[in-house]
Image 1: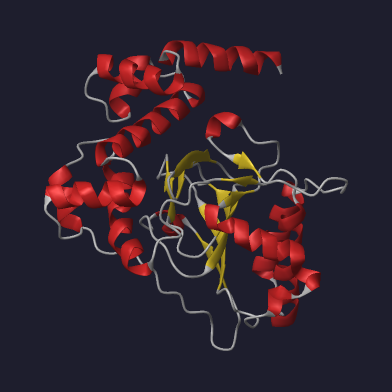
Image 2 (image 1 turned 90 degrees about the vertical axis):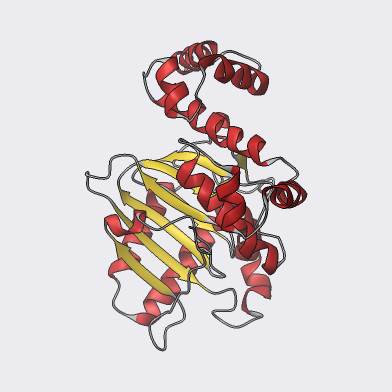
Length: 310
């Protein structure tokens, strides 16, 4: 049975933030949350990234800032292949409660506020099919797109030995992130991150259960038992918190996975149907058409046509 996926972080004694370089271990973490901000750079590997209710593919170079209490995890597509990540974590008041309230840090302050949705910093403009929303910037400003430069800055920071330079380096990275014009918001609904603590701790294990199981059999009884509720009470509670039924959410996860498979692989429609957790291809077609207003096959064809035009 699932346990509450709350992570406790401990920066090195005397340091204001935590920086770690991981191998494959970074991708074994369950869908989890913590009260610190987290900046993650994927250095090797590919698979699926889950941030709140947002799902997308990731590859090496994936750079994401995650706000406090926003559940997240990265799952490898090919676990046997090399994988790695650099993870920076810091508490909201790691430099003092009012540090970022100063005028000089206005852009960083806005960045940290937006991170409650999770923010990705791609090297090119966002693909609308990934379900992300561009971060609005102030008009009239020349804002860099230097995602490649940002990844190099994070890598250099991971090898910096001087604590003072490491702290200054982090502030410089945050400023560059705040000015990046390709930044995109991920979980714009903030379904769980803004809940009261008692509800966050109760609902997060349910989403952890979904992330781990939506492609297979999903049991309402198991989900309800994970938070100690009867199925009927669980259904009422889940809809109150998310404004969707549990099964609507399961189907949403499966359809999100299917849309990524349609444009990222050449698998057959039937293979994608079953790989995404649907047990019946006619039901898959019905659910997909209801959400996308087009069949799975035509969705793939349209994507290929649009890609060819570019």
